[in-house]
Length: 495
Image (cartoon, rainbow, N blue to C red; front, side):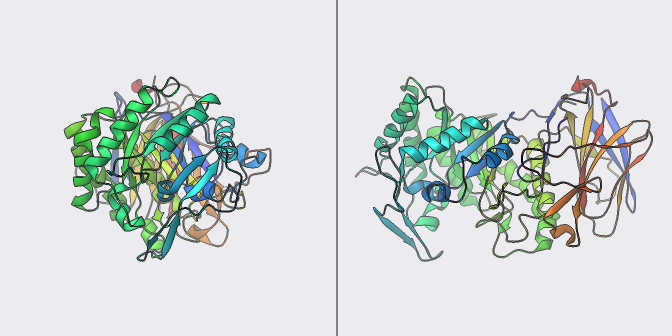
């Protein structure tokens, strides 16, 4: 297992799912027995399970927010690979490509106003030079680029106009740029966001047109086509939109995508980041989406095509703190357990939730790649998998760990109770993450086993575990999380 310290103190525990049964006991106020199935796999996610997005505002502003040529930025991003990099968002619906255009501060072709959000959207042009910079960056850091075409380029009869897309495809293929594609962003709420929209049946037809174009293109005929990138299914209308779209386009999709956020970044507090009911609601959303998707494309691959804790750029002084790790880590564990193959974090840089802060310094978040099945005994306290949440993985057998190792990912949301997990007769490698400094869980810094982690240019910090003796207990202080490797678990499914 590697622990990569990357852009945001990203403790990247690389794991592969498989799973005999390993029983542990957790002692809070009442003992809790947790069973980890180790005889068969629950789910295997994409190798790019944790991926990232660039909002279109970055390329619209001609990469002034982030220096893609920076060796420091590339080093931080490379530590997160392999990964997909999604270039898309609300402003993808105003993207125009002109390889011969000269760099300017802005290109105002047409303006759309949204009085509700007090925003004005304008079409903007991306030059060949700016497009080259994004593709060269992606290649340099081993990211696969996922591009969101402008769906609001319409013909007089309201079909999608692919002429600008074809221009970009031809330009990119001549330069050997490997790309995958989307068409539109949150189309079910587009009227609310930008004052225009696309009917789901028509969007399905538009996807079929894009599919035909890609399949006939000699360079992009094997590229992925993913979508439709709806919002989370909080209302029945979202599921209705997804169903109508899939009734037309299911057969041309490689991946079904939708977005998920917990709350509004402008109206949230510390307690929201620790809300167990909000965390659990994600499982309901996944089940609801899966039910609709399986009606038209049984067993389809499904991604969270854009996600973070809070929409609207994240929550200032919260989304970039240790606090954010509770929801992020739980989202990854829960998503993998429920069959989500990829989670695309918004954003790589930008807003309060960026993986790389605007000043290029680390920000605290955690991630595990895949999960094994974990269950609680029927007679246990409701604390199990609520305030104390545990996910289990086969450890990726790189560097110091052998096949058969199991990793526990544990989260203690209790404010005044330690969580103690007994793993009898097994050695344990502890990677306990805690906030560093006087700010507590709103600290910008993170400690591994009590030692603060800081990035130095050209040198990622080491991640030595604390080795617990056989028979020792795992102890999670209140409001902390961590990774715990059982190197001698001998799990049959992990060999």
